[in-house]
Every structure is written in structure tokens, then in C-alpha cells.
Image (cartoon, rainbow, N blue to C red; front, side, top):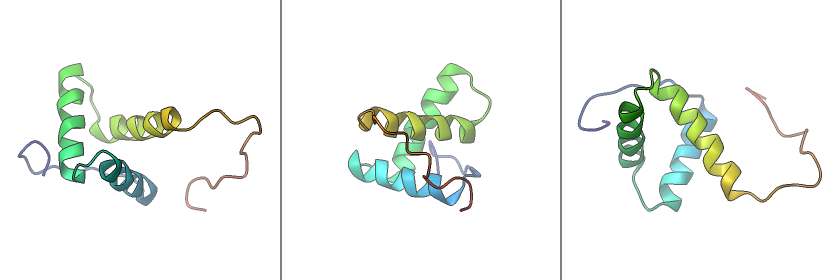
Length: 80
């Protein structure tokens, strides 16, 4: 449930894990976090909630992580 409506989002498992971690860090449920994101998406007239959530997750962790002097090119991608 997002914003009191039955909603589905197709996200890769890594993004669901990230949403759970963000929700825990922010003392929210995943549902409440997604509701807040959906409200922002609606206010901005964005087409895809799933895409907006992916961008949010990336930006959340980018802002929470200090810059690295060494490139982390060996991090897993896609379904590795």
C-alpha cells in the first residue's frame, strides 16, 4: 500500500533491500517511505514511481557516502 492505494512497483531485489535499509535508518516502514516518495513523485508530475525510487535510492546512498579516492570498479552490477 502506498498513499492508501494498492500499488505495485517492479524493482530489482537490491533496490528492495536498499529501501528496507533506508526505512530502518529513517525510522520508517517501507510502506511509509514509499508513500512519501509517491507523494513527491505525484507533486513533480513524474511518470514512473519505480524509476523515481531507483534514483532516490542512488542519491540517498551517494549523499551518505564520502567520496572515494580509489574507484570501486569491482562492485557487483546487475544480477552478479
